[in-house]
Image (tube, rainbow, N blue to C red; front, side, top):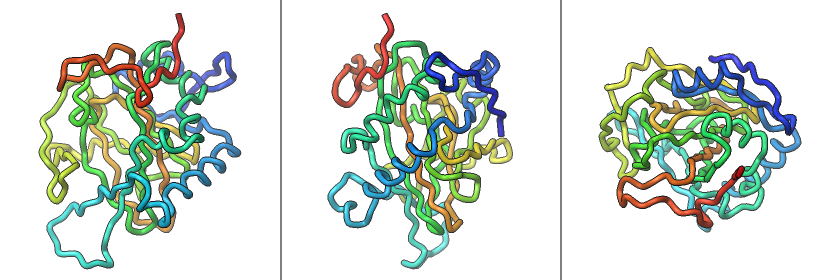
Length: 265
């Protein structure tokens, strides 16, 4: 795990040192550490649990992305869950406020500059004991953005390590896009499969309220949650204004789904 050697910015929050910025662009990711205070963590946990409660699932746009990583037969008792709530900030005021968190934006500004636009955000929940995996992939294989310089902030509301689904990264994999296959058993997920050497993986252990950062072309994955602990995470994806969709060739507009989070003239 990379060390966190942050300095403090004008708002009193952590900012990145020159060493950390250089490390991010060399490796394609950075383990930053804790950025949320304990009171905010508790408040966000309550909001998160309410959104993912069984009573709400039928009403909200939550889907299960989990598929098995092997070819063996599995019974109903083995069902895995990796629940995804896309654009949660459009459904919950507290998560909307979190996308504007000064401590997070200060760190993102260190990487992509003072003009920061939201690409999208998602809550990603792995329940205890049967939280499913996410395969090795590069985000921009899904997004098809140009230029490919988006930065993702992965924030956890629980202590995370390899056993309950901490992020894993392949250093240097952001330097070129790679071809992805459709994941077996899924109409949604992509998978790099055996093309990735797992022995190169770096695990981003974090305390609750901590973040990792990764480039949109960095290979990353999360393992199953086999513990008795929850793994409540949120991913916020940032871009610079003027980013285009490779699918349409058009600039992604500033609108309700893609607001400007910070602009300095």
